[in-house]
Image 1 (cartoon, one colour):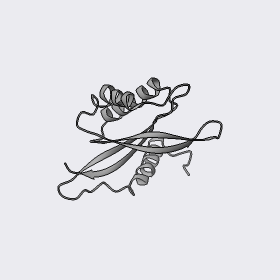
Image 2 (cartoon, one colour):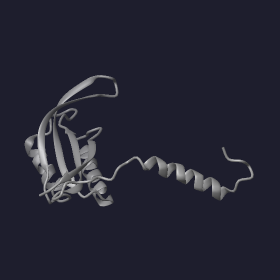
Image 3 (cartoon, one colour):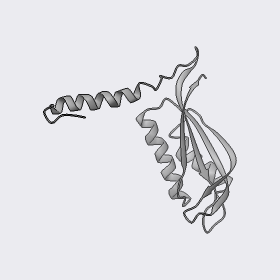
Image 4 (tube, helix red, strand yellow):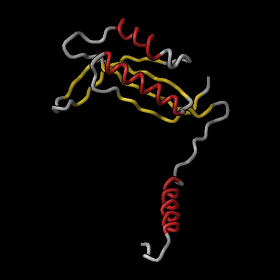
Length: 141
């Protein structure tokens, strides 16, 4: 506990030291030779749309061509999955979904591009959310 006679500078140094000590336990990502650290983004897109048929394969392909590929032209993977989630009313909703996998270097520009994709899908297909999961990985091409 700080005494009233201690300076604000000393209080700042103590607080900063405690914050940095909390980060000391997070190891840097070490990759095997021939691989490099990257971020794997996984985006989960529900295909049910209120009041109409689900997002068709043609609509999905057009969304990929117009929104995703221009932002990540280096490549991506898409998988069909069956998902479920709990809506605001507590009901379990099951729906066909798409999972988009993108490997990226992981800078602020990547976050902006991912969020633009998510926002575009929500607007275009009247979705409440697009789940984003980011994982540190080691990759080689």
